[in-house]
Length: 123
Image (cartoon, rainbow, N blue to C red):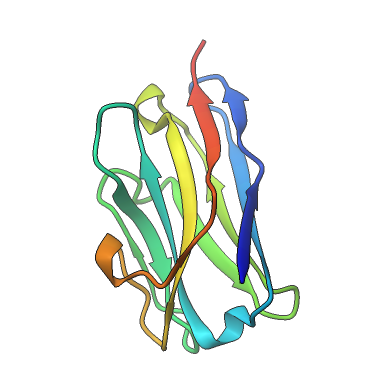
């Protein structure tokens, strides 16, 4: 079971990045999927999640209107489109899954984690 994130990097404020998370060894279609992030010296926080079957999404208030989560079950991949990035979005971003229909932004409800990808927003 493996989740591998990609797409992180350095971007200027106001810029965009698209994170991807590819699953191997299991089928993402059976899981609710989430993105979390952890900035230096801060606790890991939920950013967004999407349900398994009906595509219901949730977002942290800090990213609403700027980030979009999506999933492509045929490609066994989940995405996080991040627009209008701010310096406070700088963090390691993790994708994560929970068995069942409902996504979650609560860390201790997660079944599997990716290794993380660094996003740095700076001029």
